Amino acid sequence: MSHEPLSAVEAKRLYDQAALLAKVGAWECELARETLTWTDGVYDLFGLPRGSTLHRPSTVDLYHDDSRAEMQRLRAKAIASGGGFSMEAHIRTPAGEDRWMRLVANVACEQGRPVRIYGAKQDITHEKAMWASLRELAYSDPLTGLANRRVFESRCDELLDHGYDAGTLAALAVLDVDLFKQINDQFGHAAGDECLRQVAARLERVFEGAVLIARIGGDEFAVLLRLPLGLPHLTLLLDHALRVLAFPVVWHGHPIEIGVSIGVTLLRPAHRHDKAKLFAEADSALYLAKTAGRNQARLFGAAIDAPVSLGAIGPRMAEPMVRML
Image (cartoon, rainbow, N blue to C red; front, side, top):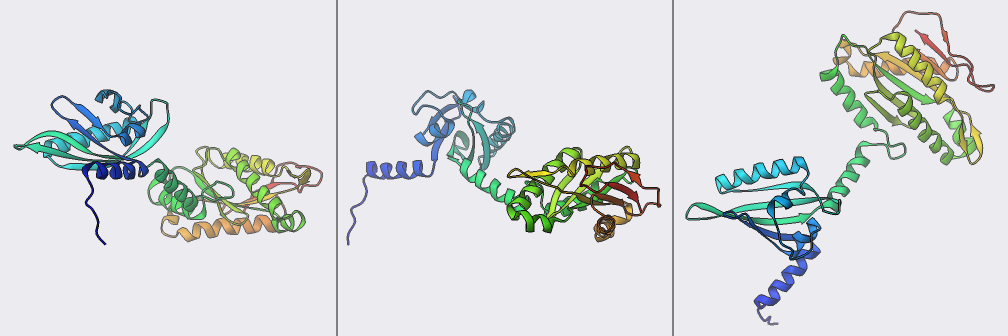
């Protein structure tokens, strides 16, 4: 089976079709006068009318500041060396639409002197969004939107290794929802999921200044705290948390009463060398909070103090308590 060679016109038509389908276009800049030449794909990428007059400073203004600075740096380096470069650049169209593009460039020289820079620009906005979505799934809890256990443990390691000043009080709080299985059994898993979402939202409000808040599994959450005002601040913070977290969740018109038990341990320099112990201490305090009754908080490793009563939450709620172990 024989094939006739494509004419130049046919070859260009096929190339143009493929380029537009891939959202890629070719460009060239004549260096002596900074004259730009674009194919239709680049005009479309930048949201400019095809064939309109191009003014390089105006097109450069469409780059976000960081991308503009990086592009100008790489461009100058390529022209000086006669080489090329590639980068991902963030741009904004004249209509205000944010887009991402992959920029590939090379320099053409004549008699050893750079005369033009040319290359391709491809719209990768959808690709960037897809990868961002995949990263979101990998690093966040899809039900609550909080960080997941993997991120939390990594951030905790970083804090202990690099960001922890032994002169500043910091703490790990581990929380879980009291009687969560009963909520699922009585109201169904959809109601249980809504309770977890509500608890997550309340945690973000209560611990607004936290280093990180995460759902680390099932009905269990964890919070990394800095406590610049010391233990009195922690007691007040836990008091407020127990009150807010104990408000009922309304599900299809039915109030679902909830409570949260909290176990807390203070970060110490020794935890740098035994990070598993940090979580074990918080889990131990959590266990004692749960065995003491609903809506309780316990702090690991402190001297035994008189219990601090936080007042009744409601006629059917157990009285929340914070105690030092």
